[in-house]
Amino acid sequence: MSFAFLLNLIQAKNLFFSFSFFLLLFSLYCLRLINADKKSIHKSGRIKEELLAEIAKRTEEFGLFKNVDQVKDFKFYEELWNGLLGELGIANIEELEFSWHKSKAYAGILKKSRDLNIDTKKHAPVNAGLDIETVDAKIESLKNKIQVKERLQNEIKNDESNIKMFDKTMEEYSAVDDIAVLNTECRALEEDLKKMILYKDSLDLAAEVLQEAGEALYSEISPYINEFINRHFNQLSEDYEFSQVSPDLEISIKPREFAGLIDVEQVGKGMQTSLYLFLRFAIISLFALNNGETLPFILDETFNVFDDFSYNRQRKILQLLTELAYQYNIQLIYFTCQKKGQFLPIKEFFEAEGFVLKEGSFGDFTILQGGKNESEFS
Image (cartoon, rainbow, N blue to C red; front, side, top):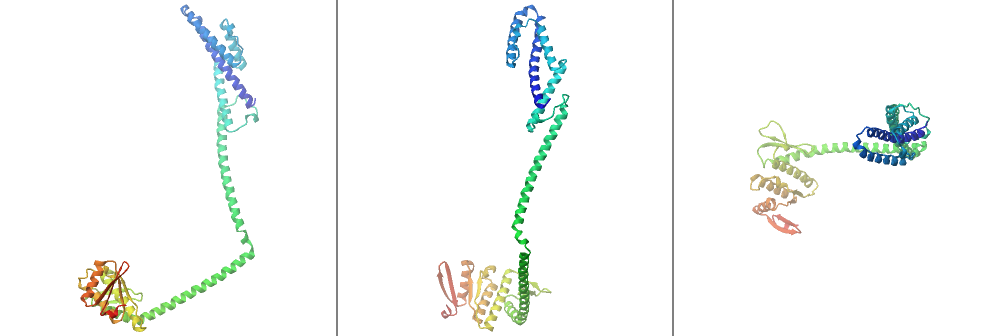
């Protein structure tokens, strides 16, 4: 029989089983009524009538014959029960119970088949002795295979999408497959490469020339720069024998109680600033001496690294810079935003040295000009 027929049979069996179990229970109850005490006859009769009414109701719902009211004894129920068992091909109650559970298992298999969208009508006839556990295991295996199939289908879709993207990319670059186009681009790249090599060689040559010129220039000016710095640096401190400037304009100094040179970064900030101020002034003075050009000497919060102006060394550096500015005719410009910390001490220093001062303003800025006489003011 096919799955469809099996489903109909199961439904019919379920119907017969339900009715059969109900009749069996009722027959057992009737036996108890026969053996009951006479005092309960009235009560038992009432219950019997209720059961008969229930049987009539159930048989009407099932669409079976309705002849319960004509039942006179238990023999009718026995014949009805044996007839039902014969129709179902079942010998006893144990076999009926086994068939009941088996029909439920069949129903479960059919439900799983429907969940997997299996058309039961298209399958070959099934042996009545079908192993439920085997079928259930096969359905689970089929379910797993379907899940694997769905996963593989998704992977195939992703691969197809990637292939389409690659195809599109290949189409975009299909134009460069032309040998003539490739040769033209290759020649253009070779020309660019030649230009870049020539440009690099030019830069290397220029760097070499500049290096040589720098070394030559340093060899000419280094004696002057070192002499200039040492001459004025010795007026600030007697703790160092001399200073030395490298071609990279890095300064080293020789402490009196030390065997070798040390980097200027190892001393205090005030001393470092003083040395680099002298280095800058030495370079500016070279322009004034060789070309007659005068460049301004600009300072911005430079004295911020010094201690208070009451100390002799800080007043000395300011005095030295002033003397150098007059010696080489260089304008000294100082910027500061600290009125009390730097502006006022510098102003007091120039007043104490007898300079003529002129104070003005430009917007939010205060301008202090100083000189030996007013003719020096711009």
